[in-house]
Length: 146
Ligand code: RB5
Image 1 (cartoon, rainbow, N blue to C red):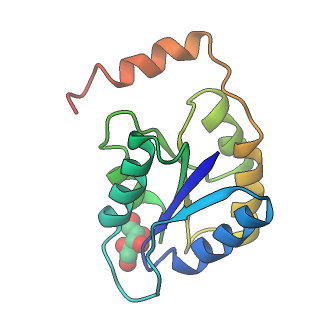
Image 2: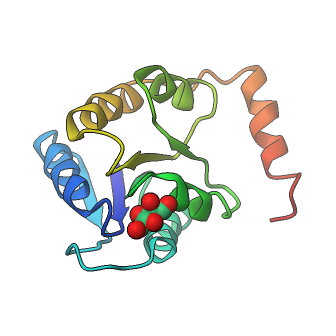
């Protein structure tokens, strides 16, 4: 499994730690930047990570901005992308179990790196439940016209 990771300047520090965390777990990482704390625009990094997933270069993504909100909005404009802001451990579990999220999103200014790592472990170790949730996910690609 390959994980594509991206962040703006608000998520740069956390992103660097998450990349190391994944590498220690022997998970292959595509680091799409940003590579410094210089101010950048979060839609550019959401775009790179979404394209990695939609092209099949990566199977999962991680995105980090200051709050996790802007970069979630940007990612969720893409058909086939389900980006979930993991604001709690339970949200991390349900984001995979029910929503089959393919991008985990964090807020670099609203969460500790320890919380992110714990939620990422939960997210990676939970399987999609399928069943009634498949019908709901299919409707995501029908409504909204994106
Ligand atoms: C950047 O200053 C900040 O707006 C961004 O990281 C994010 O929080 C947007 O939602």
